[in-house]
Length: 143
Image 1 (cartoon, helix red, strand yellow):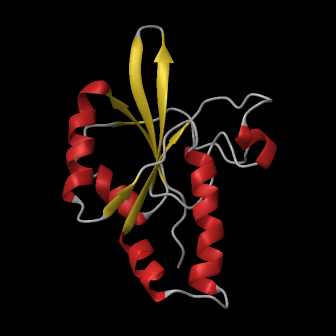
Image 2 (image 1 turned 90 degrees about the horizontal axis):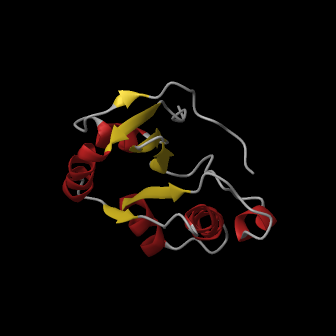
């Protein structure tokens, strides 16, 4: 049974050390593309997976590294017409293929992170991190 993208949580700035420690303690190789190119990199990894995991050119060493990878993507809140993700139809939000998607929430004096769970590993990672449920459900679709 496939994992359904899970709930979203809001982490205060004070929860970030616990999140970073959970990433370090996970035992996985953490792949964390930045907000500027994170969703684009995630789409590129998905394309590589189709070739090196499932295609005629399957690569066992790639498959082993991918199994170990924990994908944490930083997202933008808005794509501009000149953004590469907008022209490629890949963002600004990730819709699949990640363990955790993080979006910085600013405004009104707040500094928080929206953490969206994309896998069982992502859910396990947040288990010990101080958080509260997000008020709005996870948005889907791109652009």
